[in-house]
Image 1: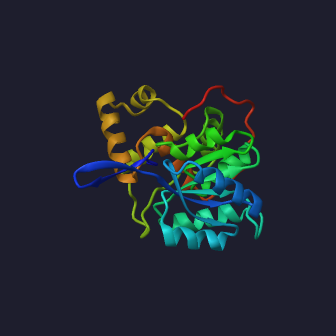
Image 2: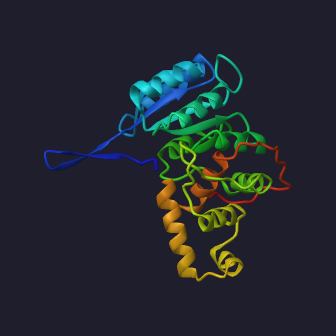
Length: 246
Protein backbone atom coordinates (compact mmCIF):
# COMPACT_ATOMS: atom_id res chain seq x y z
CA UNK A 1 0.00 0.00 0.00
CA UNK A 2 1.12 3.58 -0.60
CA UNK A 3 1.72 5.13 2.84
CA UNK A 4 0.54 8.68 3.45
CA UNK A 5 3.78 9.41 5.26
CA UNK A 6 6.47 6.97 6.28
CA UNK A 7 7.30 6.83 9.98
CA UNK A 8 10.91 6.63 11.13
CA UNK A 9 12.14 6.13 14.68
CA UNK A 10 14.89 8.56 15.72
CA UNK A 11 16.23 8.01 19.22
CA UNK A 12 12.92 6.65 20.41
CA UNK A 13 10.97 9.48 18.77
CA UNK A 14 8.74 9.08 15.75
CA UNK A 15 9.19 11.53 12.87
CA UNK A 16 7.29 11.74 9.62
CA UNK A 17 9.20 11.20 6.38
CA UNK A 18 7.90 12.56 3.08
CA UNK A 19 6.90 10.20 0.26
CA UNK A 20 9.76 9.82 -2.23
CA UNK A 21 8.65 10.48 -5.79
CA UNK A 22 9.97 10.19 -9.34
CA UNK A 23 8.15 12.20 -12.01
CA UNK A 24 8.09 11.19 -15.69
CA UNK A 25 6.11 13.68 -17.76
CA UNK A 26 5.55 13.89 -21.51
CA UNK A 27 7.75 16.95 -22.04
CA UNK A 28 10.30 19.11 -20.25
CA UNK A 29 7.83 21.85 -19.37
CA UNK A 30 5.35 19.42 -17.85
CA UNK A 31 8.13 17.74 -15.88
CA UNK A 32 9.41 21.04 -14.53
CA UNK A 33 5.96 22.24 -13.49
CA UNK A 34 5.06 19.00 -11.70
CA UNK A 35 8.39 18.74 -9.92
CA UNK A 36 8.21 22.38 -8.81
CA UNK A 37 4.65 21.95 -7.52
CA UNK A 38 5.53 18.85 -5.48
CA UNK A 39 8.74 20.41 -4.15
CA UNK A 40 6.68 23.24 -2.69
CA UNK A 41 5.19 20.59 -0.38
CA UNK A 42 8.46 19.32 1.04
CA UNK A 43 6.84 18.01 4.22
CA UNK A 44 4.67 15.69 2.13
CA UNK A 45 6.79 14.86 -0.92
CA UNK A 46 10.46 14.32 -1.69
CA UNK A 47 11.08 14.53 -5.45
CA UNK A 48 14.15 12.34 -5.92
CA UNK A 49 14.24 12.25 -9.71
CA UNK A 50 12.58 13.05 -13.01
CA UNK A 51 12.64 11.54 -16.49
CA UNK A 52 11.47 12.29 -20.02
CA UNK A 53 12.03 8.86 -21.60
CA UNK A 54 11.20 5.31 -20.63
CA UNK A 55 14.88 4.41 -20.36
CA UNK A 56 15.59 7.32 -18.02
CA UNK A 57 12.53 6.43 -15.93
CA UNK A 58 13.78 2.87 -15.39
CA UNK A 59 17.20 4.23 -14.40
CA UNK A 60 15.72 6.71 -11.94
CA UNK A 61 13.52 4.08 -10.28
CA UNK A 62 16.40 1.60 -10.05
CA UNK A 63 18.68 4.25 -8.56
CA UNK A 64 16.31 5.86 -6.05
CA UNK A 65 13.70 3.14 -5.46
CA UNK A 66 11.01 5.75 -4.74
CA UNK A 67 7.73 5.03 -3.01
CA UNK A 68 5.81 6.37 -6.02
CA UNK A 69 6.48 6.95 -9.72
CA UNK A 70 4.14 9.40 -11.46
CA UNK A 71 4.26 8.37 -15.12
CA UNK A 72 2.69 9.94 -18.21
CA UNK A 73 1.16 7.42 -20.60
CA UNK A 74 3.22 8.95 -23.43
CA UNK A 75 6.80 10.11 -22.91
CA UNK A 76 9.17 12.20 -24.99
CA UNK A 77 10.78 9.28 -26.81
CA UNK A 78 7.58 7.68 -28.16
CA UNK A 79 3.83 7.22 -27.61
CA UNK A 80 2.94 4.74 -24.84
CA UNK A 81 6.55 4.71 -23.67
CA UNK A 82 5.32 5.30 -20.12
CA UNK A 83 3.20 2.15 -20.22
CA UNK A 84 6.05 0.13 -21.72
CA UNK A 85 8.38 1.28 -18.93
CA UNK A 86 5.68 0.45 -16.40
CA UNK A 87 5.49 -3.10 -17.68
CA UNK A 88 9.28 -3.38 -17.30
CA UNK A 89 8.98 -2.24 -13.69
CA UNK A 90 6.40 -4.94 -13.04
CA UNK A 91 8.52 -7.63 -14.71
CA UNK A 92 11.47 -6.51 -12.56
CA UNK A 93 9.24 -6.76 -9.47
CA UNK A 94 9.85 -3.15 -8.50
CA UNK A 95 8.36 -2.17 -5.14
CA UNK A 96 7.60 1.33 -6.47
CA UNK A 97 3.90 2.09 -6.82
CA UNK A 98 3.07 3.62 -10.20
CA UNK A 99 0.39 6.18 -10.99
CA UNK A 100 -0.32 6.81 -14.67
CA UNK A 101 -1.20 10.29 -15.92
CA UNK A 102 -3.82 10.08 -18.66
CA UNK A 103 -4.83 12.79 -21.12
CA UNK A 104 -8.41 11.52 -20.93
CA UNK A 105 -10.26 8.96 -18.85
CA UNK A 106 -11.51 6.53 -21.49
CA UNK A 107 -12.00 2.76 -21.14
CA UNK A 108 -9.08 1.78 -23.37
CA UNK A 109 -6.61 4.06 -21.58
CA UNK A 110 -7.75 3.07 -18.09
CA UNK A 111 -7.73 -0.67 -18.81
CA UNK A 112 -4.33 -0.49 -20.52
CA UNK A 113 -2.82 1.38 -17.56
CA UNK A 114 -3.99 -1.18 -15.01
CA UNK A 115 -3.08 -4.07 -17.33
CA UNK A 116 0.48 -2.77 -17.46
CA UNK A 117 0.68 -2.67 -13.66
CA UNK A 118 -0.51 0.79 -12.60
CA UNK A 119 -1.48 1.29 -8.97
CA UNK A 120 -3.73 4.17 -9.89
CA UNK A 121 -4.81 6.35 -12.80
CA UNK A 122 -5.19 10.12 -12.84
CA UNK A 123 -6.78 12.25 -15.55
CA UNK A 124 -5.12 15.58 -16.34
CA UNK A 125 -8.49 17.33 -16.26
CA UNK A 126 -8.47 17.01 -12.46
CA UNK A 127 -6.65 19.51 -10.27
CA UNK A 128 -3.31 19.34 -8.47
CA UNK A 129 -4.95 18.98 -5.05
CA UNK A 130 -6.64 15.79 -6.24
CA UNK A 131 -3.33 14.57 -7.68
CA UNK A 132 -1.70 15.01 -4.27
CA UNK A 133 -4.46 12.90 -2.72
CA UNK A 134 -3.90 10.28 -5.42
CA UNK A 135 -0.18 10.08 -4.63
CA UNK A 136 -0.99 9.90 -0.92
CA UNK A 137 -3.65 7.21 -1.32
CA UNK A 138 -3.19 4.07 0.73
CA UNK A 139 -5.22 2.00 -1.72
CA UNK A 140 -5.91 1.66 -5.44
CA UNK A 141 -6.94 4.98 -7.00
CA UNK A 142 -9.85 4.55 -9.42
CA UNK A 143 -13.41 5.84 -9.45
CA UNK A 144 -16.39 3.52 -9.66
CA UNK A 145 -16.81 4.06 -13.41
CA UNK A 146 -13.20 3.15 -14.12
CA UNK A 147 -13.49 0.09 -11.91
CA UNK A 148 -16.61 -0.96 -13.81
CA UNK A 149 -14.63 -0.86 -17.06
CA UNK A 150 -11.95 -3.04 -15.49
CA UNK A 151 -14.50 -5.61 -14.27
CA UNK A 152 -16.14 -5.67 -17.70
CA UNK A 153 -12.76 -6.21 -19.36
CA UNK A 154 -12.01 -9.15 -17.07
CA UNK A 155 -15.37 -10.69 -17.88
CA UNK A 156 -14.51 -10.71 -21.59
CA UNK A 157 -11.14 -12.40 -21.17
CA UNK A 158 -10.06 -15.96 -20.64
CA UNK A 159 -9.99 -16.99 -16.95
CA UNK A 160 -6.70 -15.85 -15.49
CA UNK A 161 -4.22 -18.38 -14.09
CA UNK A 162 -2.19 -16.75 -11.37
CA UNK A 163 1.27 -18.33 -11.32
CA UNK A 164 4.70 -17.62 -9.90
CA UNK A 165 7.77 -16.67 -11.94
CA UNK A 166 8.58 -20.38 -12.25
CA UNK A 167 5.11 -21.25 -13.53
CA UNK A 168 3.83 -22.75 -10.28
CA UNK A 169 0.17 -21.93 -9.46
CA UNK A 170 -0.06 -19.54 -6.51
CA UNK A 171 -3.67 -20.40 -5.71
CA UNK A 172 -5.63 -23.60 -5.25
CA UNK A 173 -8.40 -24.52 -7.68
CA UNK A 174 -11.06 -23.26 -5.25
CA UNK A 175 -9.19 -19.99 -4.73
CA UNK A 176 -8.96 -19.51 -8.50
CA UNK A 177 -12.74 -19.97 -8.68
CA UNK A 178 -13.30 -17.32 -6.06
CA UNK A 179 -10.92 -14.88 -7.76
CA UNK A 180 -12.87 -15.26 -11.03
CA UNK A 181 -16.17 -14.65 -9.23
CA UNK A 182 -14.83 -11.60 -7.41
CA UNK A 183 -13.55 -10.29 -10.76
CA UNK A 184 -17.08 -10.70 -12.13
CA UNK A 185 -18.32 -8.38 -9.38
CA UNK A 186 -20.13 -11.02 -7.31
CA UNK A 187 -20.55 -10.31 -3.58
CA UNK A 188 -19.69 -12.89 -0.95
CA UNK A 189 -23.32 -13.93 -0.55
CA UNK A 190 -23.58 -14.93 -4.22
CA UNK A 191 -20.23 -16.70 -4.10
CA UNK A 192 -21.50 -18.70 -1.11
CA UNK A 193 -24.67 -19.72 -2.91
CA UNK A 194 -22.91 -20.60 -6.14
CA UNK A 195 -20.19 -22.73 -4.52
CA UNK A 196 -22.26 -24.12 -1.65
CA UNK A 197 -19.91 -22.66 0.95
CA UNK A 198 -20.53 -20.88 4.23
CA UNK A 199 -19.82 -17.16 4.61
CA UNK A 200 -17.03 -18.00 7.05
CA UNK A 201 -15.36 -20.33 4.53
CA UNK A 202 -15.48 -17.74 1.74
CA UNK A 203 -13.98 -15.11 4.05
CA UNK A 204 -11.19 -17.52 4.98
CA UNK A 205 -10.48 -18.22 1.31
CA UNK A 206 -10.32 -14.49 0.57
CA UNK A 207 -7.98 -13.93 3.52
CA UNK A 208 -5.58 -16.57 2.18
CA UNK A 209 -5.86 -15.18 -1.38
CA UNK A 210 -5.02 -11.66 -0.20
CA UNK A 211 -2.09 -13.00 1.81
CA UNK A 212 -0.67 -15.03 -1.08
CA UNK A 213 -0.99 -12.22 -3.64
CA UNK A 214 0.00 -9.32 -1.41
CA UNK A 215 -3.27 -7.42 -1.84
CA UNK A 216 -5.56 -6.05 0.84
CA UNK A 217 -9.05 -5.73 -0.63
CA UNK A 218 -11.36 -6.76 -3.47
CA UNK A 219 -10.47 -3.79 -5.67
CA UNK A 220 -6.78 -4.60 -5.50
CA UNK A 221 -7.58 -8.25 -6.21
CA UNK A 222 -9.55 -7.36 -9.35
CA UNK A 223 -6.74 -5.13 -10.63
CA UNK A 224 -4.14 -7.79 -9.81
CA UNK A 225 -6.12 -10.30 -11.85
CA UNK A 226 -6.39 -7.82 -14.73
CA UNK A 227 -2.63 -7.23 -14.72
CA UNK A 228 -2.09 -10.99 -15.13
CA UNK A 229 -4.23 -11.24 -18.26
CA UNK A 230 -2.34 -11.48 -21.55
CA UNK A 231 -5.17 -10.55 -23.93
CA UNK A 232 -6.31 -6.96 -24.22
CA UNK A 233 -9.76 -6.56 -25.80
CA UNK A 234 -11.25 -3.14 -26.21
CA UNK A 235 -14.20 -2.43 -23.95
CA UNK A 236 -16.90 0.15 -24.54
CA UNK A 237 -19.20 0.51 -21.52
CA UNK A 238 -22.69 1.92 -21.89
CA UNK A 239 -22.49 4.29 -18.92
CA UNK A 240 -20.35 5.52 -16.03
CA UNK A 241 -21.25 4.86 -12.42
CA UNK A 242 -21.46 7.87 -10.12
CA UNK A 243 -19.36 8.30 -6.99
CA UNK A 244 -15.69 7.77 -6.16
CA UNK A 245 -14.23 4.49 -5.04
CA UNK A 246 -11.08 5.81 -3.44
